[in-house]
Image (tube, rainbow, N blue to C red):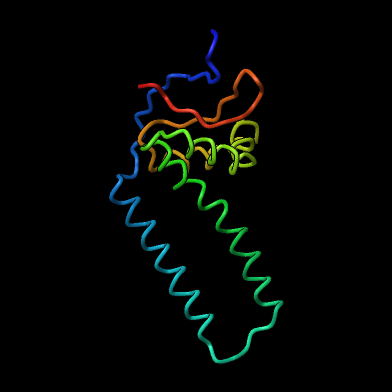
Length: 139
């Protein structure tokens, strides 16, 4: 099997999926809300302390990182471009590792969220080199 780096498991999933239009609308509404909230907080007349901004940044990272996992892989499943796949697999490695090796009560919702708007069924896999990545069904 020379030249093969990834192993793909074929799995046909009959679970209903969020349609691409619904997923797009949800993403746009969430983005618009975040922009509105940011503008509202920045334009207040009261001067904010550094502690407030650090807290806001930490909350944005803690909430934004896990929430961006799903849309990133929905995009990956539709475009299937190498740069997006490599970036997403490296950037979201802790979440993918939890999806693959974590307890079912955590791995189940991660898998559902990753596949909610995906074009192909996505799953956590492991390459021959031991790297964990997100693969897709071949059909």
